Image (cartoon, rainbow, N blue to C red; front, side):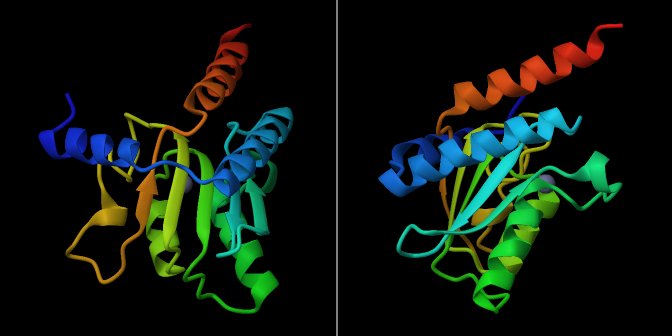
Length: 170
Ligand SMILES: [Zn+2]
């Protein structure tokens, strides 16, 4: 069962409305997630937009393809965004991802000083942005991010469900 703080964090994240640029970025992130599934990776896609809403980085889960345990969609997108602007500091940027980030990716987006996180489906088992943990809004840490959760969540959930169901078949 989810702790009370998690329920509160979720309710808050739902009250913040996504901007038009967030929705466009989520549509792109979902396309990237489909590509991940095509390469036998868990379908998760991510996009980084700058303060003006322009896409500066894209990523999809590449863990199976690259045999890299850290190649989650968010990390791949953050690396591309940082390379494209020539700085690790992504303050003012938004990370848009189809699934609630794990602990590693929540840590990575804070290290990059990303200002906003927009995500699709909640991850009850490993989510670190309001489900199991709420790392990105932990006041004990020096940097935090605004969170908008549940954006096009059904599309993301459907992709993940289809992926895992197809893998269960003999
Ligand atoms: Zn992750």
